[in-house]
Image (cartoon, rainbow, N blue to C red; front, side):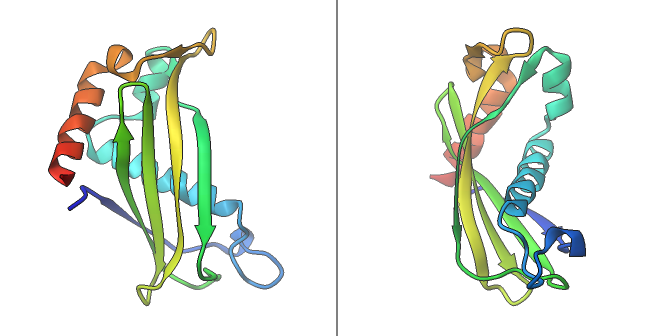
Length: 142
């Protein structure tokens, strides 16, 4: 079973369109909330990464919309990693509403780059402890 984090959110009115449905681009913000929680539960932080002179930009994003998430709903973001090859990390997400209905699923792929040059560097070289923690979490999923 996958090692997952669970983040509870309540979509804000400003997150919705004229129909009261969460605007599609705002799901990327929800993915980020789930990813940040996952990273923090693993014992790391984006702030520490940036202070060390690196960024982890999104290289690729994919989202499949299944059911509308609306203003007033309560939702849970499930986040886990599905790839950690030392270069790329893939975080996978599912967002369910308060009734357990899957509203969206997706993933984001990240690479590590130097802040000053934006040149890619291997994750396992820049952050060996972080990389190894992800290896352990992936092993738990098997």
